[in-house]
View 1: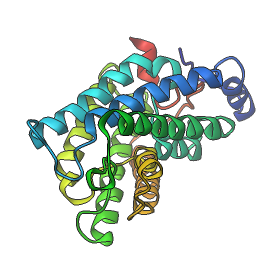
View 2: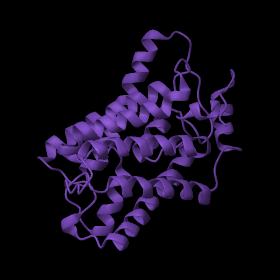
View 3: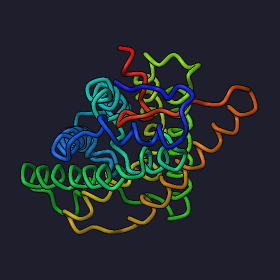
View 4: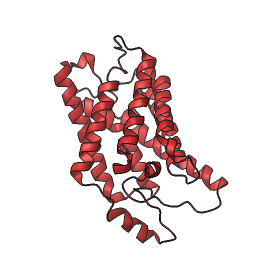
Length: 258
């Protein structure tokens, strides 16, 4: 469960984030490995359009549904970040402890690498059937696509999970639908990664590094810009100071109400 600081100084808030709320490394790794494995398994064929019997709209829906399910499954334990860009952005905007950022990113990357290795063993993957993300068009087009869709994703996450006025119970549904729409729009352009870990794992496993920097730089820039935009919007419409969220579930506080 997450709690909010009640008029306490910043030091007390950060202290509460670091004491009593941190998941163990094994727990964090297990959660992110499990989720990354499923996301990679279900979404592996988006980028190169090797759809088989599954249509592209079906793949988009699958992406959104699996993220939604995993948010409601582990959000109350780890915050259901799954994404280094989200973790970094929440820390920058003081919604997450900086001390936990390296552990979360390590877990996210390790989960992605192990999931990619599992797929490579099960499916006999070759570079020609690469299931990671590579630019379909130019690097500029892919960078723009990744930045824009991650901007939208983080804007939505900020709106439904960090604003006390939002209806938090539906945050998982809204985030899942946002991912579904982003994949539908940007999948044919960049693969719609939105997540550095999702791209790094397959690249390291299959040794395909074409345009990898796009899927690191674009999502991080987009996520920071999205959170900045929502915080600016909130500051112009909400007079009372925003309350900081504490604990590892920072950014997905809605789970505590389920």
